[in-house]
Length: 535
Image 1 (cartoon, rainbow, N blue to C red):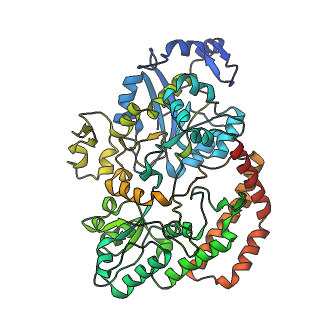
Image 2 (cartoon, rainbow, N blue to C red):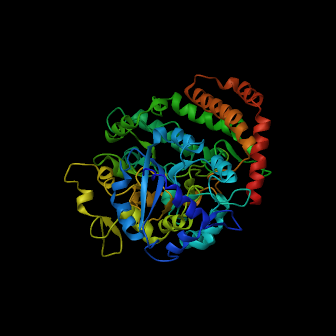
Image 3 (cartoon, helix red, strand yellow):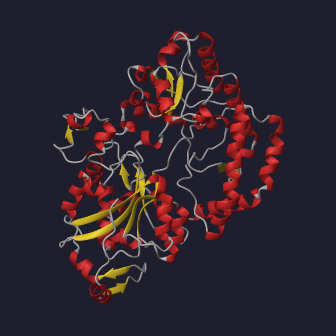
C-alpha cells in the first residue's frame, strides 16, 4: 500500500480551493481543474499525471510493496495516475485504520482496508467518506452495469440514507464455486473399500464415519473427519437441522416461520444439531484436537492420508501427492426432520468496505474511474492474470493460463510466492469483481466447479450478507451486548460438543443468554432487518 503524498504548497491549495464548487446532489467537492484534466472515457484517465495516496491492508501472502509490483506499475502507465501505497499488514490494520479515521492524516482512499459496515455508515454520514452515488452514475460504467444487472448488489451496498459509500468485492453471480467457498469432500477409495455410497443423510454420514473408525480401510490411524476448526463439521450439517438458512455470513440469525429474525442458538433445532456433532466427537469420529488445530498440522495430517472427509477447498489443490485426487465432492445432507440445505453460500457482495474515497481527495472523479476499471473484463483480466506473454498465455480453447516461469518457479518458490511478484490479489480483501474466466485460485479448479454443481440443488434460497446496517447507538449495543452474547454462545457451543458441558444444562444456557439483554439485541436486529427489506 502506498505512502501518502507530501502536503501541497499553501498557495497551490488556495488556488485549487478557489476553483471548487459543491455538487448539488451529493455534497462532493468538485475541482474544475481536476475535471478538465480528466478524460471521461478511455485511457489515460488523466492527461497530466497526478498522484494519489492510498492506505491499504496487506494480507500475509500478498506482495510486500505495491509501489513496485507489476499489476499497478502497468496500470500507472495506462492511467497517468501514480498511487503512493501506504502498506498496512493485516495484524495492525484495524489499529492503524482507526488512528487515521480518529484524527490522523487521511489518505485519498482506503484500499483493501476491510472497513466494517458500521464505520462506513458512521464516517459516510460525517462526510469523511464521500458519497459515491452520483460519481458512479457519471464515471463508473462497469460498476453501474453490475448494479443494473444485479439489483441485489445495489441493495446490499446501499445504506438506509440511500447512499453508497464504498466499492465492494463482488463475486460474479454465475461463479458458483467461489460463492460456495468451502465444500465437503469424502474419500472415494475408502467408500469403495467399505462398499458405501457418498452419504446423503446425517445418519449415512455417521455410518460412514463409524465404518472408517471400525474397519480402518487404510490400515490404521484413519480419522473420519478433519478440518481447520469445528466450524467445518458445523457448516456441513447445520442446514440439515434447519438453522443458519440465510448463510454463515450473518452469525446466529435466520428467519423464523413468521419471517421474523430468530436467534437460533437458543432453538431446539440448534440443540439437536449440537447433540449430533457431540455424538461424532464423543465417539472419536472427528479429529480430537479440532478445537486447537493449526493450519500446518491440518495440511500434514491430510497429506499423510489420515482424513476420510474434510470441509475446505479442493483437496486436489491443497494436499500434497496423490492423496488429494482420492477425494470427491460431498453432498448436502438430509437431516432427521427432512431439512436439507447447504448454508455456506456468499452473496455476490462478499465484502462491502474495500474501497472508500475520503474528503481529502482532490480528484474523486478520476479516482472513481481508476477503481471502476477493475469491475470490467479488461481490468479483471489485468488484476488476476496480468499481461499476455509476460504473465499469462491464452490457450487454443480460449482459457487463460499463467506462464511456465510462474507455475514452475526457477527459484524454487511456491505458486503463491511467484504470483506475489506480479499481483496483489492473494489473501483477498481487494475491491473489484472476481470472474471465473480470469480467476486462477483454487475455486476455479475443475474439482471445485464440480463440487459446486453437486451442491447447487440444495443451496439456501437467500443470503443475508454482507450484513445489516445500524445507527451509532445500535452499534454501541451490538459492540457490547452483541459481542458478549456471541462470545458466550461460541464458548458454550464448544463445551457442549466436547462434553465439557452437559445438555442437561441447556435451559440454564438459554436463561443465561436471555439475561444478557437478548430482547434488546433482537429488537435492534429486527429493526435493521426491516430497514434492509425496505431498502
